[in-house]
Length: 157
Ligand SMILES: [Zn+2]
Figure 1 (tube, protein in one colour):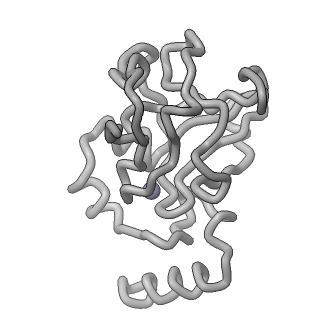
Figure 2 (cartoon, helix red, strand yellow):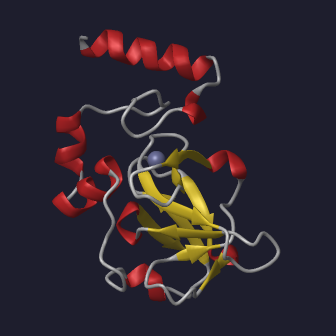
Figure 3 (cartoon, helix red, strand yellow):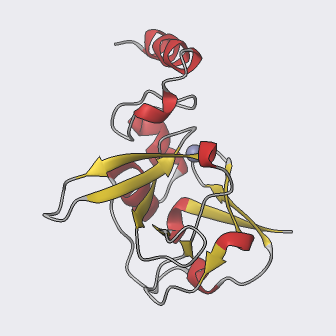
């Protein structure tokens, strides 16, 4: 498929409001880039996590220890996706939040890669992989959005 057709198809899907149903692999997002474009703008480690659903090493991200007030943006498209207001220290070694800044900032899908069934979470706008959502988070949601710091850019308030 040529690039123009691909972008047109993506825009049509976005117009139908189907953008949240896709995954990093399908490309049916408001912001789409070719593999080469993603590789040019991301480091190898960022690409592995964001575009191939890899996982960064626990305790490797400085954002795990980030305590300042501010917003966490998607590294792939700059959409504000998580707020320091909902961040907490889960002790897992990955930046953890009990909810996104708004439910429309993210998309989810069922991940069956491991025997354990998990909920994968990605950027609603560009499909970049963030991490997984577990049910052992704090109140009021009881959710733990366990994210890869490399997928995010922190902007202090
Ligand atoms: Zn994004």
